[in-house]
Length: 306
Image (cartoon, rainbow, N blue to C red):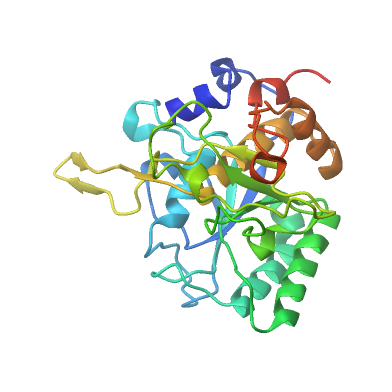
């Protein structure tokens, strides 16, 4: 995560600042969460919408990686590979199976669950590093969008991946197309410029002339190191504690983590205020709107006094 902090301009001193407000709780809908020392003490609640297990698990690894980007404390790296907001708490819903596949019904059930428990766990942000393409049953797509907008109206900042179906116009994930969603695309700025597999080459893009302009923001997403769900401890020796993954799924928790820092500092900030703040503080990359949105996430500016 060190390269990411430099690229999105995260000041190191934020980790030593003590704010009066409590750490922010982030809900994550993904493949679950596995035990990892970097995430110990963060999980408040786990719910399995796939196998109905009562115990936390992640048979894919994607969700654990996302959670590590959000709030891993870097325990197995001596603090070097920390997530964006290491003090944040997690509420995790498993909506995808071991192959990374899920159903609209599971997602809808998870949205309903978050609405029920949001006050109990003080959920302020929902991270969705899950993309859904065009559905044959259009009404299900509309129902999911309505639930996401309902969560937004209940003061939960919904942060959603733009998807990896780019770079064609209109290739953005259907779940990320709502006005009441902070949509995150992928861009590494000056890094990985000569890498043909860099995330910006396949990050989902909006339509150039749509009334609703998407994505809203971009963040790094190529070869991001984070928690490996399948790490091993053999006689005190740690094997493969971290793994690199790429995509808008990785860029999204970078933005959610930054949001957690901002909302911890400014707990009364509304979703609309945060969205405006993101827009005003982003770094323009000189790319088309439907590729970069307002530009690259800039956490240093986000955390400056109002």
